[in-house]
Image (tube, rainbow, N blue to C red; front, top):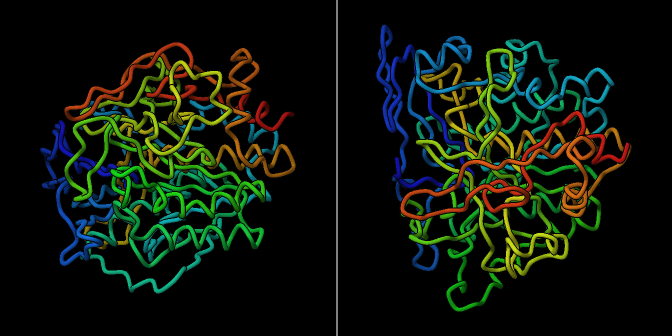
Length: 463
């Protein structure tokens, strides 16, 4: 399917008693339900900025009833035609259990998650999620930044971001169960261009200055080309927003961002059409940020791999990646200059993001569709990796700060020492745009590859 996808928001596909899954609908068996990806809608009466028609980055969430219980992977394959995974399978696949046995659980570390509007049921939903999988509960700290409007379950902008908030919190917690989580809820949705981004950057800067953030997970962004002045070579509207990341660098705070769900292209100013050529997005493209791309995992019911990971590219999206049109190649990418050329290349590392390989989440912010849902996208990969960083921070005994220097340095070591696993198959072509092919070593589809967390966390922490 080649319909437009927005970056940052979760690509969610849910089926209730489904027997077949197609690009936009679910054919159901004994229970009637329809799941449709709302790919082209904008918020009613949405404001425009400088003539640019903005669209919430989280638009496109599924309108459907939820399952009362999650399915196993084998049942998902037979009933839905796609793979589905639980946090326990991720723990097995990424060799996280070996860390937990050592007492490395993220204890004493704080993950900051930034989303517009948040979710009014996040604590309840996390507790249901935890009970299902036997994960210890945690109290999510909610920080409202600015004038956050009352939640409206009939507003697709609100429910889209609530779904994103749920995914981010549940999977950061699943990977680092003893890390403290702060969910920052801003009152303005991030959109193509700059709308909503100042509020997010202000909130991040405040938390960094207060010493409360160890790692920041961002499942949002905007196509570089949509920032005012880009077409004239004037990048000030974008670079003026980097203050939070500069603050993070000064305080050794790690900042992550999803690389995108539209492969080597992304959304135009109207938020629905895609550029017919390769583009990149910010903050993923920022040299001060670690860009998290997407892989497709093939696991059995226990979480053991039955095939090597490949670049995420299924019927519903593809992992973002490419070269920045704004930033020059940073020094840490000197060793991969033959791949990136003179510009910053993304992603840096990749984690599970495929919809055919979606993650189970529990959501009840919309009472008409409360239950278990399947979600994918690089907005899944970023919070998963944020949990990994929290584990490494705990093991190191201090914040690790900017990771990219460490990542590209570790990649020079053998896999058994670095924990970095090369991804050599797949590509991130999407819509009409031919993307990048995975290859041996660094590539613009998977970055350096993916990880064996049991080894990677030790290598990253230097312990």
